[in-house]
Length: 178
Image (tube, rainbow, N blue to C red):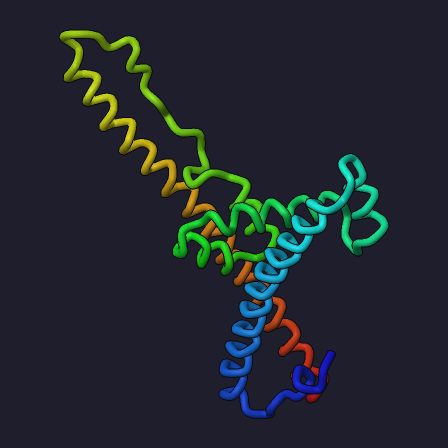
């Protein structure tokens, strides 16, 4: 542990500011991890384009300090991250690395989208078909929102766990200092 983390002021009013700063640093490092993984993925894609066909896994095993599956995940992250609209890329960049990879792997509407079978709607049933299509769009929007809320909930839980760990460390330092 660095000296900056082991220094604990006697005044309890100063602790929240230090805790908040530690949480901000943790968030910054989490964002840096996603950006570093995207960069690694781009480099891996560049290397893969130059490696002889069929030799990729052996090349990764020999030359890289990561597993082949990790390399594949980073390459997927680099590919998909570049295709995201800026607002979605920002959201993914704020996730912990594992969740960012999972978020990239799933489509924008995480649950399977409901599609009405409009082939069954003919002639006089045109209005019914339109109603089904509107209901389908509304259902897809709800499913997409539920998927995004689940990701946000996971992020909040992750932040809560990190804050809990930081508070435990501060408590241990206070007990040690006393």
